[in-house]
Length: 155
Image (cartoon, rainbow, N blue to C red; front, side, top):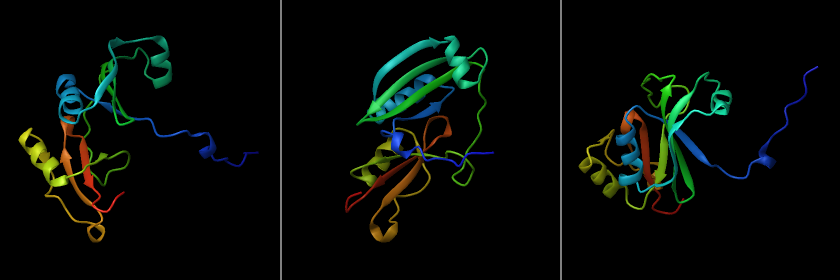
């Protein structure tokens, strides 16, 4: 007889990180560190401990790895060496994780700087929910969609 599912909400402390897998390590790391201002809090050139293969379910797993942090939010960056991943384009309407988001002070200025850095916004800054949110989406490294949103009246 199956047991009734019990919530785990009382065991969750806080959100910790979003994992990001890339092909171009230098460009992707530069995007998060140099452009967005994340700090590298840990980095390993080749991670291949046996427990990594076990926890990921990837026999023989080996990767380049870094943990990046900005204001308590972490990006766990991977470049898989073995097995090598394949790019799968994701659109906002596809099933699964579709984008990451950063709250910003000035969406128009962020958009200007992203364009100057060579990244492709998907639109102009929009006014949504009666002006309570001013977001735009941008295609970042490896095609990842990054949302930047300004909340003029607070979050």
